[in-house]
Image (cartoon, rainbow, N blue to C red; front, side):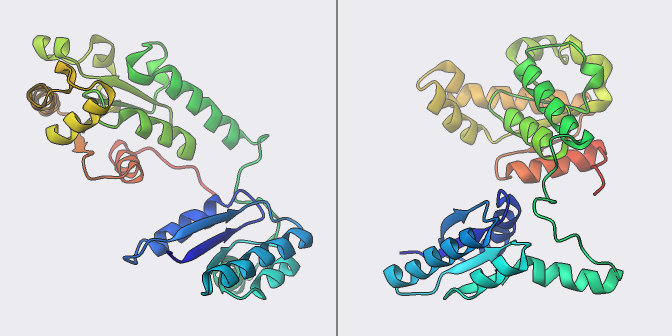
Length: 271
Protein backbone atom coordinates (compact mmCIF):
# COMPACT_ATOMS: atom_id res chain seq x y z
CA UNK A 1 0.00 0.00 0.00
CA UNK A 2 1.41 3.44 -0.88
CA UNK A 3 2.00 5.93 1.94
CA UNK A 4 -1.07 7.91 2.95
CA UNK A 5 -0.96 11.69 2.71
CA UNK A 6 -3.57 13.79 4.48
CA UNK A 7 -4.42 17.27 3.20
CA UNK A 8 -5.89 19.17 6.17
CA UNK A 9 -7.32 22.65 5.65
CA UNK A 10 -9.88 24.99 7.15
CA UNK A 11 -10.93 25.87 3.59
CA UNK A 12 -11.12 23.96 0.33
CA UNK A 13 -7.64 22.47 0.69
CA UNK A 14 -6.72 23.43 -2.88
CA UNK A 15 -3.66 25.41 -1.80
CA UNK A 16 -2.36 22.65 0.46
CA UNK A 17 -3.01 19.98 -2.14
CA UNK A 18 -1.22 21.93 -4.88
CA UNK A 19 1.78 22.44 -2.61
CA UNK A 20 1.75 18.78 -1.55
CA UNK A 21 1.62 17.61 -5.15
CA UNK A 22 4.62 19.79 -6.04
CA UNK A 23 6.65 18.35 -3.18
CA UNK A 24 5.60 14.71 -3.55
CA UNK A 25 6.19 14.70 -7.31
CA UNK A 26 9.90 14.82 -6.52
CA UNK A 27 9.72 11.26 -5.24
CA UNK A 28 9.45 8.16 -7.42
CA UNK A 29 6.64 6.83 -5.27
CA UNK A 30 2.86 6.70 -5.44
CA UNK A 31 0.87 8.21 -2.58
CA UNK A 32 -2.70 7.81 -1.40
CA UNK A 33 -4.23 11.25 -0.86
CA UNK A 34 -6.95 11.81 1.74
CA UNK A 35 -8.52 15.27 1.68
CA UNK A 36 -9.88 16.75 4.89
CA UNK A 37 -11.26 20.19 3.93
CA UNK A 38 -13.25 22.68 6.06
CA UNK A 39 -11.59 21.71 9.34
CA UNK A 40 -12.71 25.02 10.84
CA UNK A 41 -13.31 24.10 14.49
CA UNK A 42 -11.51 22.26 17.27
CA UNK A 43 -14.11 19.46 17.11
CA UNK A 44 -13.26 18.91 13.45
CA UNK A 45 -9.57 19.09 14.27
CA UNK A 46 -9.97 16.28 16.83
CA UNK A 47 -11.90 14.25 14.22
CA UNK A 48 -9.10 14.83 11.69
CA UNK A 49 -6.44 13.77 14.22
CA UNK A 50 -8.43 10.61 14.93
CA UNK A 51 -8.54 9.70 11.23
CA UNK A 52 -4.81 10.26 10.98
CA UNK A 53 -4.14 8.01 14.00
CA UNK A 54 -6.47 5.32 12.62
CA UNK A 55 -4.38 5.26 9.46
CA UNK A 56 -1.33 4.38 11.57
CA UNK A 57 -3.17 1.41 13.09
CA UNK A 58 -4.47 0.12 9.74
CA UNK A 59 -1.33 0.66 7.70
CA UNK A 60 1.43 0.20 10.27
CA UNK A 61 3.23 3.38 9.28
CA UNK A 62 2.96 7.07 10.03
CA UNK A 63 1.13 9.07 7.37
CA UNK A 64 2.27 12.43 6.02
CA UNK A 65 0.12 15.47 6.77
CA UNK A 66 0.14 18.79 4.92
CA UNK A 67 -1.80 21.40 6.86
CA UNK A 68 -2.82 25.00 6.24
CA UNK A 69 -4.88 25.44 9.40
CA UNK A 70 -4.88 29.07 10.53
CA UNK A 71 -6.40 28.56 13.97
CA UNK A 72 -3.54 27.80 16.36
CA UNK A 73 -5.65 25.58 18.65
CA UNK A 74 -6.84 23.41 15.77
CA UNK A 75 -3.34 23.29 14.39
CA UNK A 76 -1.88 22.05 17.70
CA UNK A 77 -4.52 19.32 17.88
CA UNK A 78 -3.58 18.01 14.44
CA UNK A 79 0.14 18.28 15.21
CA UNK A 80 -0.30 15.92 18.17
CA UNK A 81 -1.40 13.15 15.81
CA UNK A 82 1.05 10.34 15.13
CA UNK A 83 2.26 11.60 11.77
CA UNK A 84 4.83 13.68 9.95
CA UNK A 85 2.99 17.03 10.03
CA UNK A 86 4.19 19.70 7.61
CA UNK A 87 2.71 23.01 8.72
CA UNK A 88 2.76 25.41 5.79
CA UNK A 89 1.68 28.44 7.81
CA UNK A 90 4.33 28.03 10.48
CA UNK A 91 6.95 27.43 7.80
CA UNK A 92 6.15 30.48 5.70
CA UNK A 93 3.92 32.95 7.55
CA UNK A 94 5.97 33.36 10.74
CA UNK A 95 9.24 34.19 8.92
CA UNK A 96 7.32 36.65 6.74
CA UNK A 97 5.83 38.32 9.81
CA UNK A 98 9.34 38.88 11.14
CA UNK A 99 10.72 40.10 7.83
CA UNK A 100 7.81 42.45 7.07
CA UNK A 101 7.39 43.48 10.71
CA UNK A 102 3.68 42.88 10.27
CA UNK A 103 1.25 40.55 11.94
CA UNK A 104 -0.71 38.35 9.55
CA UNK A 105 -4.49 38.30 9.77
CA UNK A 106 -4.68 34.60 10.75
CA UNK A 107 -8.13 34.64 9.13
CA UNK A 108 -9.61 31.52 7.59
CA UNK A 109 -10.24 31.39 3.87
CA UNK A 110 -8.14 34.42 2.94
CA UNK A 111 -6.46 32.44 0.17
CA UNK A 112 -9.72 32.12 -1.75
CA UNK A 113 -11.56 35.12 -3.07
CA UNK A 114 -14.89 36.13 -1.60
CA UNK A 115 -17.83 35.92 -3.99
CA UNK A 116 -18.47 39.65 -3.54
CA UNK A 117 -15.05 40.82 -4.73
CA UNK A 118 -14.38 42.24 -8.18
CA UNK A 119 -11.65 39.63 -8.71
CA UNK A 120 -14.10 36.79 -8.12
CA UNK A 121 -16.73 38.33 -10.39
CA UNK A 122 -14.14 38.82 -13.12
CA UNK A 123 -13.18 35.17 -12.83
CA UNK A 124 -16.79 34.03 -13.24
CA UNK A 125 -17.19 36.37 -16.21
CA UNK A 126 -14.05 34.90 -17.78
CA UNK A 127 -15.35 31.35 -17.34
CA UNK A 128 -18.65 32.26 -18.99
CA UNK A 129 -16.78 33.96 -21.83
CA UNK A 130 -14.54 30.94 -22.41
CA UNK A 131 -17.52 28.55 -22.44
CA UNK A 132 -19.40 30.76 -24.92
CA UNK A 133 -16.36 30.98 -27.20
CA UNK A 134 -15.30 27.34 -27.01
CA UNK A 135 -14.43 25.54 -30.23
CA UNK A 136 -15.35 28.51 -32.42
CA UNK A 137 -18.98 28.57 -31.23
CA UNK A 138 -19.22 32.35 -31.37
CA UNK A 139 -17.50 35.25 -33.12
CA UNK A 140 -19.16 37.85 -30.91
CA UNK A 141 -17.14 40.09 -28.61
CA UNK A 142 -13.78 38.71 -29.67
CA UNK A 143 -12.41 42.19 -29.01
CA UNK A 144 -12.97 41.38 -25.32
CA UNK A 145 -10.83 38.25 -25.49
CA UNK A 146 -7.45 38.32 -23.75
CA UNK A 147 -6.21 35.42 -25.87
CA UNK A 148 -7.49 33.26 -28.73
CA UNK A 149 -6.11 29.74 -28.91
CA UNK A 150 -5.95 27.99 -32.29
CA UNK A 151 -4.98 24.49 -33.30
CA UNK A 152 -6.34 21.25 -34.68
CA UNK A 153 -9.19 19.52 -32.89
CA UNK A 154 -8.16 17.78 -29.62
CA UNK A 155 -4.85 19.58 -29.24
CA UNK A 156 -5.72 20.90 -25.76
CA UNK A 157 -7.41 24.22 -26.53
CA UNK A 158 -10.56 23.76 -24.40
CA UNK A 159 -8.94 22.63 -21.12
CA UNK A 160 -6.30 25.35 -21.45
CA UNK A 161 -8.96 28.02 -22.06
CA UNK A 162 -10.96 26.95 -19.02
CA UNK A 163 -7.86 26.72 -16.83
CA UNK A 164 -6.84 30.26 -17.79
CA UNK A 165 -10.34 31.50 -16.98
CA UNK A 166 -10.71 29.66 -13.68
CA UNK A 167 -7.22 30.32 -12.32
CA UNK A 168 -6.40 33.75 -13.70
CA UNK A 169 -9.66 35.34 -14.85
CA UNK A 170 -8.36 35.36 -18.45
CA UNK A 171 -11.00 35.59 -21.17
CA UNK A 172 -9.84 32.88 -23.55
CA UNK A 173 -11.58 31.97 -26.79
CA UNK A 174 -10.48 28.99 -28.86
CA UNK A 175 -10.86 28.11 -32.53
CA UNK A 176 -10.22 24.80 -34.27
CA UNK A 177 -8.18 24.85 -37.47
CA UNK A 178 -10.03 22.62 -39.94
CA UNK A 179 -9.40 21.30 -43.49
CA UNK A 180 -11.40 24.21 -44.99
CA UNK A 181 -8.90 26.63 -43.45
CA UNK A 182 -5.98 24.62 -44.86
CA UNK A 183 -7.50 24.61 -48.37
CA UNK A 184 -7.93 28.40 -48.23
CA UNK A 185 -4.48 28.76 -46.73
CA UNK A 186 -5.77 31.38 -44.30
CA UNK A 187 -6.87 31.74 -40.73
CA UNK A 188 -10.62 31.80 -40.09
CA UNK A 189 -11.92 35.18 -41.25
CA UNK A 190 -13.21 36.12 -37.79
CA UNK A 191 -9.68 35.94 -36.40
CA UNK A 192 -7.82 38.07 -38.92
CA UNK A 193 -8.33 41.35 -37.06
CA UNK A 194 -7.24 39.79 -33.74
CA UNK A 195 -3.89 38.38 -34.81
CA UNK A 196 -2.03 39.92 -31.87
CA UNK A 197 -4.14 37.87 -29.43
CA UNK A 198 -3.67 34.50 -31.13
CA UNK A 199 -1.56 31.70 -29.70
CA UNK A 200 -1.31 28.25 -31.28
CA UNK A 201 -1.27 24.72 -29.93
CA UNK A 202 0.04 21.73 -31.83
CA UNK A 203 0.46 18.06 -30.91
CA UNK A 204 2.32 14.97 -32.05
CA UNK A 205 0.23 13.22 -34.77
CA UNK A 206 0.61 9.81 -33.13
CA UNK A 207 -0.70 11.14 -29.82
CA UNK A 208 -3.48 13.01 -31.61
CA UNK A 209 -4.60 9.81 -33.34
CA UNK A 210 -4.73 8.03 -29.97
CA UNK A 211 -6.87 10.77 -28.45
CA UNK A 212 -9.23 10.97 -31.41
CA UNK A 213 -9.63 7.20 -31.55
CA UNK A 214 -10.97 7.29 -28.01
CA UNK A 215 -13.63 9.69 -29.21
CA UNK A 216 -14.38 8.34 -32.69
CA UNK A 217 -12.64 4.97 -33.14
CA UNK A 218 -11.83 3.84 -36.66
CA UNK A 219 -12.90 7.12 -38.29
CA UNK A 220 -11.05 9.14 -40.91
CA UNK A 221 -10.97 11.93 -38.31
CA UNK A 222 -8.82 9.70 -36.07
CA UNK A 223 -6.70 8.09 -38.80
CA UNK A 224 -2.96 8.63 -38.30
CA UNK A 225 -2.47 9.82 -41.88
CA UNK A 226 -5.19 12.44 -41.47
CA UNK A 227 -3.73 13.54 -38.16
CA UNK A 228 -0.33 13.97 -39.78
CA UNK A 229 -1.89 16.05 -42.54
CA UNK A 230 -3.81 18.33 -40.17
CA UNK A 231 -0.90 18.88 -37.80
CA UNK A 232 1.51 19.61 -40.67
CA UNK A 233 -0.91 22.07 -42.28
CA UNK A 234 -1.70 23.77 -38.98
CA UNK A 235 1.97 24.23 -38.08
CA UNK A 236 2.73 25.52 -41.58
CA UNK A 237 -0.09 28.04 -41.30
CA UNK A 238 1.05 29.26 -37.89
CA UNK A 239 4.61 29.73 -39.16
CA UNK A 240 3.35 31.55 -42.24
CA UNK A 241 1.10 33.82 -40.19
CA UNK A 242 3.78 34.55 -37.60
CA UNK A 243 1.76 32.99 -34.75
CA UNK A 244 3.60 31.83 -31.65
CA UNK A 245 2.80 28.22 -30.79
CA UNK A 246 3.93 25.21 -28.82
CA UNK A 247 3.38 21.46 -28.81
CA UNK A 248 1.08 20.27 -26.05
CA UNK A 249 2.17 16.63 -26.41
CA UNK A 250 4.30 16.37 -23.29
CA UNK A 251 3.12 19.45 -21.40
CA UNK A 252 0.60 19.78 -18.60
CA UNK A 253 -2.28 22.23 -18.79
CA UNK A 254 -0.49 24.32 -16.16
CA UNK A 255 2.68 24.50 -18.28
CA UNK A 256 0.74 25.42 -21.41
CA UNK A 257 -1.23 28.13 -19.59
CA UNK A 258 1.93 29.61 -18.07
CA UNK A 259 3.57 29.79 -21.50
CA UNK A 260 0.49 31.48 -22.94
CA UNK A 261 0.52 34.07 -20.15
CA UNK A 262 4.17 34.81 -20.81
CA UNK A 263 3.96 34.97 -24.58
CA UNK A 264 0.76 37.02 -24.83
CA UNK A 265 1.97 39.11 -21.89
CA UNK A 266 -1.27 38.98 -19.94
CA UNK A 267 -0.78 40.55 -16.53
CA UNK A 268 -1.79 38.35 -13.61
CA UNK A 269 -3.84 39.99 -10.87
CA UNK A 270 -1.84 41.29 -7.93
CA UNK A 271 -2.37 39.86 -4.45
